[in-house]
Length: 252
Image: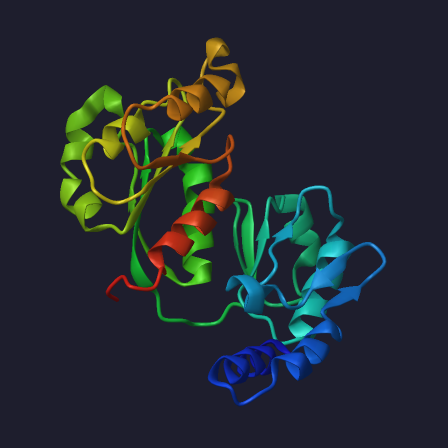
């Protein structure tokens, strides 16, 4: 059962055209594929709205290729591969179709054109934060969200952020990325009515403690409506922002 067949079955259960018990038996069959080094979850998209994401760090190029091929065989497209180094990307060239960003260390395998919807803004405090910003932005775009970028607009020159206030006010969700003292999400959170996803980065001098100072500042923000992901976790921020952006009940 490929992804399209699975989604059709679930829709039939919702409409009453298929019995839940029969559907459950079908769903239990081939829910995942055991490759020996990975158990590929083929039902992830039906359960969560997005296919399984491949974390490239720690995997060999051969393992990544095997997982992509298994997912491709079941009809998956726009497969996100995060933390993919340039060395591994070079070994994967010609193995399958993909788009790759060396800055974000992110690839999208079997890329397919899709209509981007909603409105996410990704805001960076400084140019040094762009790798994490692009990981977030490209993740959200691969999942189907429209993204606007506002880069190098940190609190050291607040007029730069205020100059893009029209973009921020139109967004359904904002991803605010900052290292150093991590103040940007608090400022953004005090200016807008939409949810803000804060991303601390490891950018900063010694007392930044590899991003810990920024993380603690964001967790202690006095601005309401802010959630915080882990240090340098652009992917997590992009995924969460996409979920918020695509929530039902929000006008398209």
